Amino acid sequence: MPLLENGRIVADDWVHVPDDAPCPTDRAVIVSFARVEEALARPGAAPVGVRLNPDTDVVTLNTVLPRLGLVNVDFPGFRDGRAFTQARALREHLHFTKEIRATGHALPDQYEFMLRCGITTVEIAENADPSVWEKAHTRFTVAYQPSVLNEKSQGFGLRRFLDA
Image (tube, rainbow, N blue to C red; front, side, top):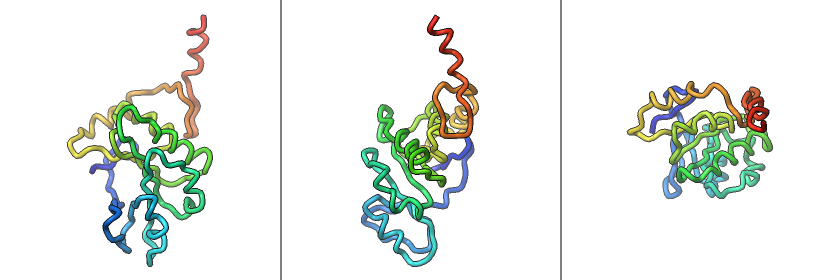
């Protein structure tokens, strides 16, 4: 699947490894939470990422988080926003500074909010038009929601007009 970073398609150096497949030792791998210890114990220095289910509490990663190069959060459906919460918790509470990748049913309209929650890359569908995602990256210039990024929300000043 195409990988989006900062509104542009980039090369993906990671490979998703299913639970029933052997874990390659010479490639950066993304494995399920159940296989993360096994992947970290592989010989060699290839990076390891973990794929989280939406119901996984990110605090369970606390012991392995410093050794991970990526955390994959999943959007199983349009109305399920738990991945936003997971990404934000990884950044704000666990101080994870590496890649957070979104997979699943994410929409271009959600892209800027993903970035504000700490998600750095998004796997988009093979048949998706990358230009729609690129436009979504520049469409919104003012945000109401707080961000884990080092930027200030500008929309809070609108409250005084709404309360009048």
